[in-house]
Length: 500
Image 1: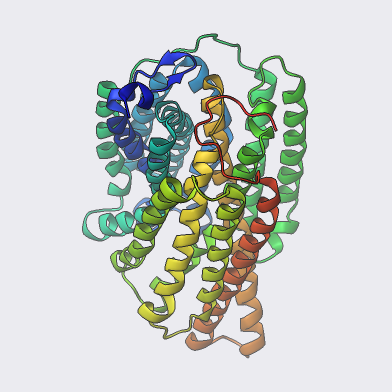
Image 2 (image 1 turned 180 degrees about the horizontal axis):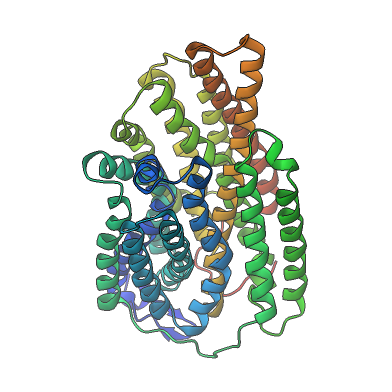
């Protein structure tokens, strides 16, 4: 096959990244890993940061939530800015800004400084993530190579959370909690240096104005929804869902979202053009990413709690326990995009992955106080990993497939929005359900103050309830996503917008 065949045009122009395309992938993968793992790398370090900076348990969750709020709220704007101002420029801005915020966070002397740094991290992550994915979309347009590239990228996206847990455990145990922030400087130096060397300048052929009304509605709706779910998670049991602040923000978020969708249909230069989401494969990919991210939360949060508090694993050992899952996600993601997506309809492939993840979650309900990792935990964990590999990599590819060059950034942002908002909802929903289940168990089995045994049994019961709910979410996702996706094998060579 000739080089001319392998180097298709992007919007009628020769791809400037073709000769360096695999180096481009390496740079983008490092940046993507930095953004994804930062959602979990600080989790294990939080108790140590709390001791050092003297903040309360109620404040602790805002170290994680501040990142999610800024990241989820600004993603669509970040994606459109990449299309308008230039992907390389936005990519480098995101990397450098993320690194500077990480340095400030690592040097924090109080809670306010740490939370502010985390919010700024999220804001620059919202610039970086869609710019990176849109660069990948416009660099790899040949079907075979696109499959390999998106398989690697999707595998990193799916495994980044577990890598973050391992890295957070190692850094916290052997160095200091501050290194969970400083480590981003290492990633950023590699990504920024690589970006300067291998990324070609990009500027939009037609620099369209930003839809200001749509931008305000989109950012405000995402902020209100994420904040509403995060606030619900701060309350015990079901109290968070009946709290006036939770209800108010969620209603406001949904109303703003409806207003945003209505605005996009009539705006001359929409922030999120309807043509991006109206394609069945892209719409199905966004739905799958959103729903899978809700269910996925249970694996990381509750299994981490279980390993550390019930089986008494150290932070490093807990991180190592997720390594087989990490490896399996990366391998299966690459296989899904390189081999399966070109031969099997996404209508079959993605729901199969969701159902396999559901089966793995259901098997995890077999845990007990003295369960064996090798026989009780590892097999279902690997099954979940296989399922996620069949979902995440194809969804990253399908979610950006067929868009015109000028929409690559916002299509990439939509994939990330689906993942981020889904994770935020999963955080609040499953945590609330688990807390309620533990309280009910203690009430039923303890008279007066519960013993250590009853408390441990209640914790395990709450985790199993969360796993069952997670499994149900994956099943529902399969039933919803299957009919949305287009029948037949996806046209991986498409480089024009497909109207459904």
